[in-house]
Amino acid sequence: MLKVASVFIVGFILMTANALASGPYLGDADGNKIDFAYEHGKALYSGRIPSVGKIKFCVPKGDKFVKVERKTLKPYVGGDFGNLGNSLVNCDQPDERIVDRIGESNTGFVLHYLDKRYKLKLKRS
Image 1: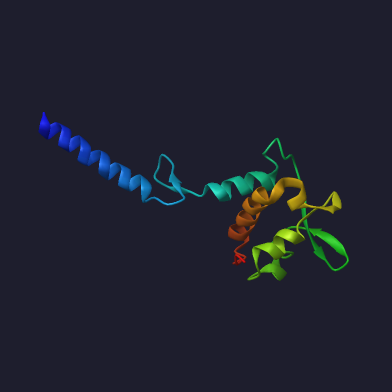
Image 2: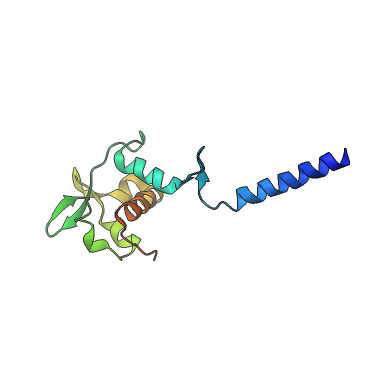
């Protein structure tokens, strides 16, 4: 009985250590790592969060605003999160900044998504 209990305790400790060492990612059924910040940012960006709704993301280019794409984000490569975060606006209402519409936390998720998707190499300030 004591041997069974000790095997159970050792197994539990090893399982807990593995779970704690996995970092900010959790695995799916196939063992692939899932970046939940990326997935939440993607859902916000694509309009799949009902409480936020569909938003068209734009950045300033000269005196007008253009849709967020790889080529329109080129000036932000290597910049910081704050610069891009403050530049994002709603295309339908250019005077409405994204951070004011969806909040700082959700804007952070969108920036994380854009940074990874377009390989912007943004720096945290």
